[in-house]
Amino acid sequence: MEEKFDIFQWANEIDEIKNNVSVELFLFNKNYTPYKVRYTDNLTANVKEMFMNAAIKYIIEEADKGLECRDYELSDGEDKVVYRTQLEKVGRAETLIHLIENEYKDIDYFTDNEYEFKKVKGIIAKFSYPGGDSGTKTFYIAKGIAASSAIKGAQSWELNGESFEPFSAEVAIKMPADNQVAIIDGTVVIFNQPKFEALFQYDYKAQVIAEEKAKELEEKYKLSFSEGLTLNALLQDKKPLLKKVQAFDIEKEMSQQDVIEYADKMELELMTDDDGSIIIMDDKDLTMFVNLVNEDYYVSPVNGKRYEIKSKKLLEDAEGEPPRGQ
Image 1 (tube, helix red, strand yellow):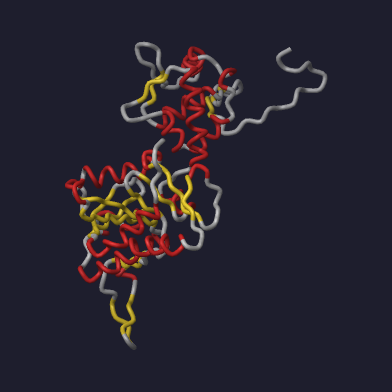
Image 2 (spheres, rainbow, N blue to C red; image 1 turned 90 degrees about the horizontal axis):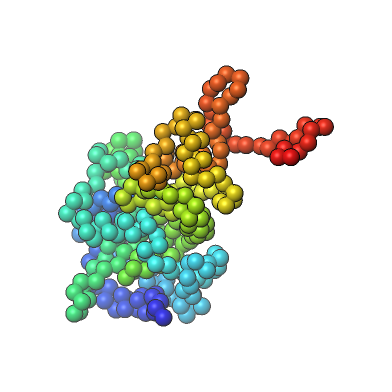
């Protein structure tokens, strides 16, 4: 049986060596692209305090008051609980860490003139410390940043004593003080469940549903995806599409050949490969495929124009007519 990560042991270990821990900061945008951030030496203590010390202090102090660590997948928003899950389950967080660890030399330094702070989604601190025979060890602590937390220098003044002066920086950022997410040895530790889910766009229940429906669809239909894409991941990213798929009775939906013929009739560019698999290059292709299965395309008998039906409401049978299908 796999041993689960012990957040309490980790906090006590880091507390003992916290003066030997170095830290590097990265901003990341809504596409989870990281950017290096320089900071002055006199800010180091503050960075450690806001990210690392606050987290380990909370864990150590609250452990004596009944704090528990439970699996996120079994969570229900309880008080006095931090949650844990595997990094590999949280795709966007895993991608972010992979880029920092493996593409470091290609990561640019952030400047507002070039990348615009309004596109920033969060900040992540990478902490490193000597790990004995295993070399350097690392852990990460991430926080979400709202665009509204930034103050533009060109539009702001600063109050110095009794006088207003021009704001001296391009952008000032108010850092969130709360503990949100830590990533340690392949484990995601969640201090604040709603902020974690918003930061990494992660919804476990939606993921489970997406996995189930993806399996059902791939058992019925032959689909071919671009390299790196999966039906499960695409469905998780398209909540309205997932909701539509949830309503499918897969066994009763039209066959693969019917879907292809329906696409031809509607003059839609549904691509297939040599063995008849339906090709899905991106989320637009997937949307077309799902809409076809759901019979969301229609040719008007009045004007001959094609329409995509956004919502459907089944009409009652006209009075005196036999029920449809009889």
